[in-house]
Length: 284
Image (cartoon, helix red, strand yellow):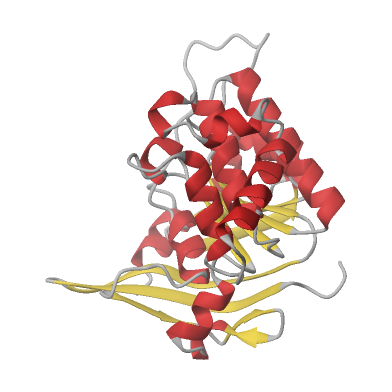
């Protein structure tokens, strides 16, 4: 890997609660270059918390610290909120899980894409509209001039996700965090969205952090995989070598997957009474 776009060392996230500090992310470390890196794990493992911590979008009750959280040579945790706003959306974009909840229902989708451009560039609204239509076309939306004037409830789930991708790409970021970007899509549309993201990584040379719980998907789509459990990265390996995993948790995830052509009476379930699970969950 060439010089990383993002470098994370010992990232920790704690939440203040009535019962004291809840340690949600523990000593997570990884680098991201111009590649596709997946973070996988069960719900509650800390995947999305890591993604939001990178762009400082966690609530005020969260306490975030790290030995290093460097993006393009800048330490993100030491930046003022104003300087962070220049990076968030402009250099690091985040695609959220479901466009139905991410798009503003009272604004046309085109206005929302234009707004993402106007937030970072001093241009006229006419120029922003032109760029938005071009961006909608670049994510394979037919008749982008017509779609520009539609509202979120008037577009399908697949088109809504492409609109979200267009909105995140219009400032020309160096890195994208995609948090379950295809979970609300059917198989055919999912393949189209993944092909689009893959093309963007290859053609624009961006870094993609892909948050998912779909092992089969990341194995075929990503370059590297980080496996998280109880807020920690328990294993890291090439996506193509996921079947060679050594950690019991990763093996348990793989064993629980149904396989076409492989008949089993019951799927395996994770054994959380094993020493490795107890040790990880008990760490402060």
